[in-house]
Image 1: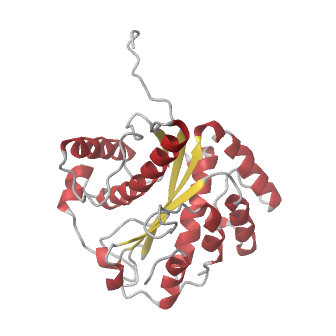
Image 2 (image 1 turned 90 degrees about the vertical axis):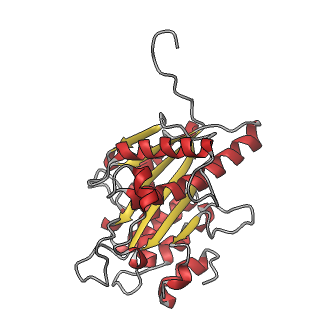
Image 3 (image 1 turned 90 degrees about the horizontal axis):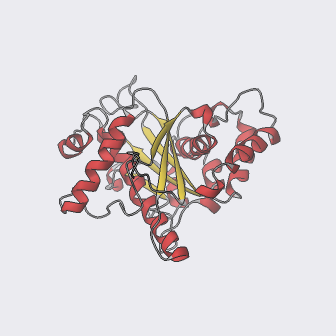
Length: 289
């Protein structure tokens, strides 16, 4: 651009991210009594950019409908149990798509991935960034296919992250750039799926406080509903809320949610020795475990 301003692509979609649980892997509950949570979930909500502003009214209406207007934002884990299902039902009827990655970290305890650490540039962020990569693979495919189907060409998606303490979001941006370079050079690690960089751009990454983003608050509902569904054995274990989101969980070309709208990590999930209760939510979303 002639005035020195950097060109930024115009996005057709906006993807909001939030998480539930602790991404730490040095010590993991229940192996370590005071360890980080056994599960870590990342929720993502994709909407058309033209409808981004409508999310404020949607969240406001949901909070009003459940008589939860004292707090300025919607935070799923702070809701009393009988208010959670109405929230999920309301979101399940909205015009958006949900994606979630749920990682059971027992097998990740003390695990290191030198390749992922090198790309992350920050050895303590590699696991979080890897989970984000898995989501990016799926949402970029969805956005590319949807925009090509509707307009004949791939169009960009803006990424909006809910700010949490302990994460270096600057490294998320750098990590995305490095993945793009590796993909272009053909030396990206783990090639079964690769983010579609026709619709991703490091200039379209934003970090915002949770209470200032209606989209991130919705992503929190997705992440937290699945976190509660996976944490069998906890007193508030309940799969009902995550199941209620089914109408908006993304489905792949095979019309299944498994490994697309809902992704269970690690990949060799049969080695996890999950209980039947822990498997319940994943079986609901088409996993054969």
